[in-house]
Length: 69
Image (cartoon, rainbow, N blue to C red; front, side, top):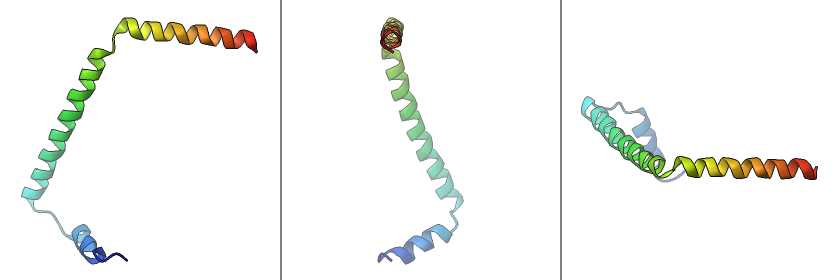
């Protein structure tokens, strides 16, 4: 058992105050907003023509693989 095992057990068993719960919710909300903004920025950069070209390359590769088999 690590030296902080007793403290970890205390933290798990201890109830959070309303202020701690609200602070945790606010922190998780800010983290979710950052992730959402980052994913939207990546989605905006993914152009439709680029996706269509990728799908075309995959289709050609599938045809070549099918002929070789």
